[in-house]
Amino acid sequence: MGVRLALKEEYLPGVTTGLKQYRMPTTRDMPEVEMLLVETGDPSAGLGAKGVAECATVAVAPAIINAVADAAGARPYTLPATPTRMMEIIKTVV
Amino acid sequence: MGQGSDTALTIIAARELDQPRKSISIVTGDTANTPDAGPSTASRLVYYVGNAAKDSATQRKDAILNTASDLLERPADYLTLIDGRVALTNSSEASGQSVTLAEVAQARQSADQPLRFDGIFDPGPLIYNEETGEEKPYAVYVTGTHMAEVEVDMERGNVRVLRIVAAHDVGEAIYPLD
Image (cartoon, rainbow over all chains, first blue to last red):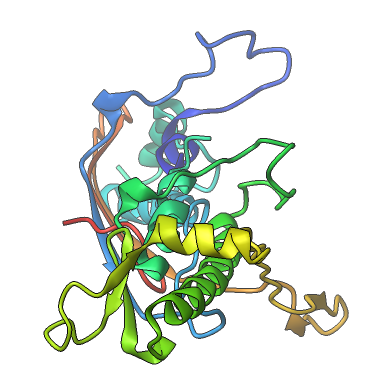
C-alpha cells in the first residue's frame, strides 16, 4: 500500500477510466520486506499487544521518497512520483 | 476477513486457558451467537476484541478451576489446566489425579452454573480537545520506523524499490514467527 502511494496509483477524474491508467504495483515492483517486531509490552491493557495493521502502511511512502531524494538529488513533492514527475525534478538538478 | 484475526483471537484464548490451539473453535460474524464488537478496522481488533477474548478466557479459567477444585477436593491454587484436563500442579504427589474438561462442564451443567462467559474490554473515555490538541483521542499508540533503499533511473525517471526494512512496536507479538 505504501509503495503504490509513493510511486504508482493515481486517480485523475475524467482521465482515469480503468486499470490501464490506474497502475498498481505488482510483485515485480516489490522488494522483500524485512520486518522487525519491537516488543515493549503495552501496559494499557492486560494483553500487552496492540494492532499495527494500518500503521504499517503509513511510513512506507515517506521512507521511499526520502530515499528517492537522496538518490536523485531532488525531492518530489507530488505523489505518486511517476517517471514523468521524476524527469521534471531530475531536469532541475542534472 | 483476511486480517488473521481469527488466528490471533484463537491464540489469545488458547494461551490464557493453557490449551492447544486446535481445541479452540472460533465463531465470528454469526449474528445469532456473537455480539457486535465493531469492525476489524483501524488496527483496533487485536487490542479491543483480543482483550475481551482474554477477559472471557480468564473468567472461564477461574470457573473451570473452581469446579475442578470441588470435584478433586483440592484448593484451586493447587490445580493446573493442561491439554483437555485439570490436574494437580505437583502431579508427582498423587499422579493420575485429574478431571477432564468434559467432566468439569458436566458438573457445571448439572449444578446450573454458566458455561458461557462474555468478555468485556473498555479502554475508558476517549476525548480530544480540538482547541488545545490535548487529552486522549485514541486508546493506544504505536510507533514504527521504515527504511527504504531505491534506485532512480536518471534518464527515464523510473524508481525501483530495492529494499524495505520495517520496524514496529507491536507491544507483544501474538503470532509466533518461529
